[in-house]
Image (tube, rainbow, N blue to C red; front, side, top):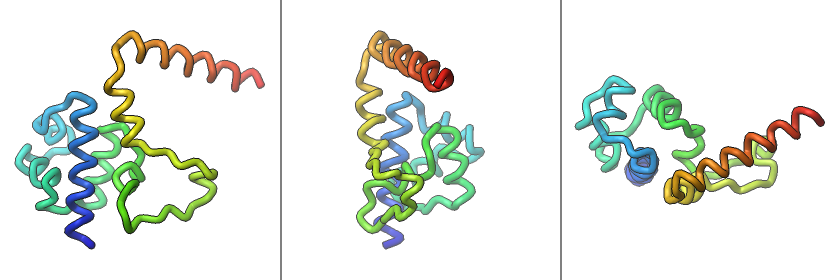
Length: 121
């Protein structure tokens, strides 16, 4: 299981890095490793420690669960966290990254307006 999870995590890391337009070097600098280490993470050759996973999650602006979703042996049993919603961050990330700048700006505008409504009750 460990080896296949390393490959899965590496694919998720690469997908997110590319969707943000980042190089392996940029990610490596952000978490204080070499770009070769990022290559090994992405290939699944090396596993990612919990500390590094936290750093990657913060730098890539995804929740830690992003790296586990879609993994065949992962079951999220925290119902308060999921609230019966099955969010697929990979899908959202791919979809959002494929949008034009204008489309992204419109989405941000909608989200900004929605948060104002929530505050007023």
